[in-house]
Image (tube, rainbow, N blue to C red):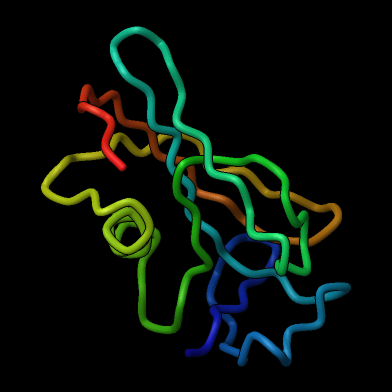
Length: 120
């Protein structure tokens, strides 16, 4: 799947295969979800050790790079389903920020408060 490449105003200017992205010059898009429960506890995800960026570090419950033809909204719901099996829940769209280092991307943040029993 190809990744969306945007300009400094987050306007789509093209797509590239992930392996072709020049992280020094290309700007891409990411969606991310912070999931909390009513007690204020936060679900974090630990990145796989095989990741080339930030292996083993903790981050938001769900995150994904926006593929060709997707919107931020479509991506976060797809990723939530794929990564943690969450579907049928409405997320709140919050801030979109432009991250400049160590990679250059726009991140659209979403939040949800959800009480569920933990299971293995």
